Image (tube, rainbow, N blue to C red; front, side):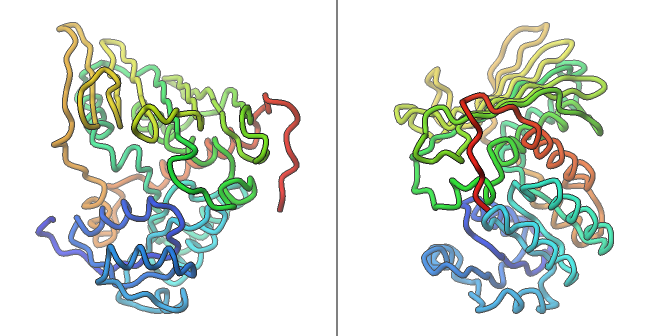
Length: 346
């Protein structure tokens, strides 16, 4: 835990397990979890058991009206995240959301408007970047010029569908937003980060449901092509990780530069090295392996300082919004490639 002073924070919405990582990032940065609101008793029991110092409040308003609470974190059902963040910002709270922060371009427009009006910080915890030491270390190497100018990234985000029970909302397109809007946001943010792009466009995107006919609104595959003024990116996402892998997904990222390349094996090295956070660097000197398990994660302390100092060191506000905008645009314009697109329930 850092020695710097933090501040009280609270959680509203704990439907996705990412809430635990969000909480730990702030606790490790010296902040204090004061309260949480969750209407689901079964989820609240688990969260309270892990964080007994936090009071479970009966109404969201108890958090919002508590002037000592500086920041609210949330990983609620995706379609409920934007409304919660809007209410929190209007009460003078900074907000850290799980991705996706919004499930439609209309929701994103609302987030942008309210953030501008209130001046509050709206941060999105892209966990495949901010909670992955290999990603952080790759960013340090890229910024140091280890592979020259980055001209392309390839981000692969495979997931395992049956590694834990999935609630009904997980299979409802109007609630989770679609595969590109949801888990695709991770890869889009990393494309912008590694290529140092402040503008970009979606060249092509497609989604489909190849193997889950009983849940027709689930998109079990999706990919997209991105382009910025100086680089291109390819993203592939799926729910086809087999049980035999041993982890929920073999997440990889390749960063191609003019003088070398980096490959990340974030969660497992199927070549046999134990653990996670594996980085391979190839340059003119040769190929070498870097174990990133001791790399420091800067996002939590940086966000803490941003809240206290009203700065943008953890993640620029426009970068935050642009990653979401590109993922939502890719989803909205995606070609359906596995038969007729199902009717989406409202």
